[in-house]
Image 1 (cartoon, rainbow, N blue to C red):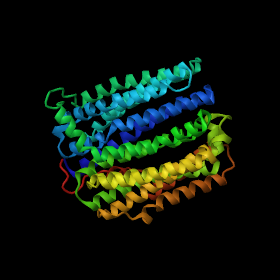
Image 2 (spheres, rainbow, N blue to C red):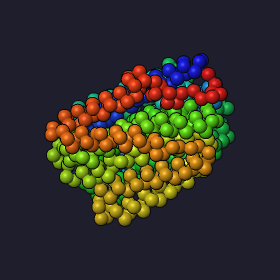
Image 3 (cartoon, rainbow, N blue to C red):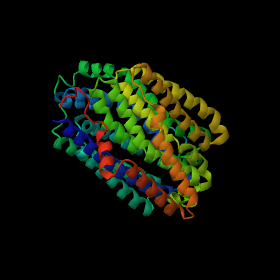
Image 4 (cartoon, helix red, strand yellow):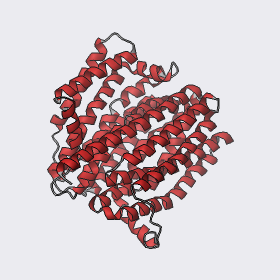
Length: 484
């Protein structure tokens, strides 16, 4: 395949991945907004707490199998079926006891029987999501994300439809958790169908699933596996600590702001997925550095606009989405979380680059430093500032992660021109903030007009729509020596 063909294919994958993630996140945000309005703060907080608890179990189970799957298939497409099978089998072996512990912890908690059942349902749903995440990783590895993106849309759309219907009908917390589980089960079926269209199925033979093969898979991912556990703990531990220290209502107030931060991350996942396979296939530090720079310049500009909107009018954003219950209680958390997507993006791109240059110990070191900062800040700030303190700790931790990973890249010989790559996000955020402050419009119109102005200036600055799409297409484009 020619360089132009590979670039076009990568551009299509970027666009498809972003579209699928965007629709999926929009669907998830839709039922979350309805849940925040229909459930009591205590019930909504319990759901968010349960999701965080299940996320910790999922972190232990993921163990780095997915990134190694991408890395292996990027070098040899023929190993996709055994690599996928071993990844699913190995993480399932870990997942069953990990999720059982989470469910037992919920069952012995001093809550009502209905609440205990709700937590167990969430744990099972997140277990199903663990399997579908690995299925989508196959699409990333083979550089054809259209079928898996379609499966994700089916899963998230179905979940939203069922959940909203149940909530409006008065199904309450237990109904929401049941809908979440039903959507995750449908997701398994849609992802199996997607993989079949790619010619990938589980390879259920003795050699692939032998104890020796699974143990070797576990060992191959050991350093990265510990890193994944630490990273997801960094992502979910704040809500768990907040629930333990301050209770479910505090988790709800924090959760509505955190959901907005989390909903923006589809862009990071899409850019990271599109660039990692190309970086993993490359041995050129300059090429790897360019992928990090391009990804940050493009996605970082979107996040800078989000940062400006939340800083300028946090209460207006919350009132627009959640109604009148949460704006005052959650605005402090949202302002501190406004910068978290930028920091998360930088950390994700830099750790992907470290993985590509085979510096896994540096990934582990950066994540351990960030987790230590996160735990220390949470323990100090949550008792005094509740969810606002948790938000501050989250953003600061991701900033530390990005800084340490960037230093690790420099040690590995991958240079990133930080001052140059910050230029586009800084200009975008400045223009967005200026437009929001200058426009005397209601929140939704204010943000829409300001975003349109920023988008028009961005496209004009890149030389028109075709030039903009070309830049996106070069993200993850072919590197010197890359196999067709």
